[in-house]
Length: 257
Image (cartoon, rainbow, N blue to C red; front, side, top):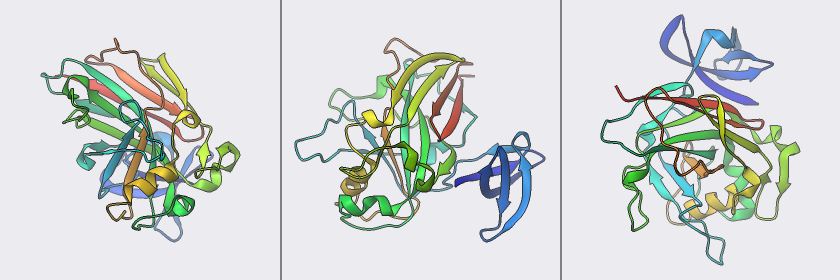
């Protein structure tokens, strides 16, 4: 299934939920269908309304040790927005970039979860697209508020049953072969694949639960899925779009006014 949260353009405000099938949105009340909507009639919301925690496993600056124990830092759940959002960037940000992540949503919490059981704790996968203040990344390897500008999550949460055909390995939990493409103003700027990540979602779940109990609704982001050019600086009016195979596409537009 592809789970979806949205609001109607004709009735903005109330958050609704449902499933996406054949390009249409089937609204549900949690138990049964209560309506059907065309894609042009809805505005996507973040598929997780208020996650208790956002953990970011950033492979570029946090390499694995010999024990395959991935490191992470905490992001700001309040920075999460829905797909196709305009993000107001403060004028002091002079080196604005982006990073795309494979994100997993926890459905069953737990403490010190073994890797071979970790996939059972997931509701599904989605995409996270973060605007990043690269100048705020500190020389000591910490991230300050570099990832605090805006992180689009969505557009849907794809449940594991729809991803079986994309399995690349199950040695350390399920690892999926999902191609990712990043475009700026419709021009391709980066490409990658989820099977190139040096650890699996299951390993991330195990690492995150080793010292703190995972809760339902927590989000874990793994990436970046594709490396944007270092000299790429986003400016006012730029639109970043990330597409991931079988997960969909999300966009963020930059405003500095």
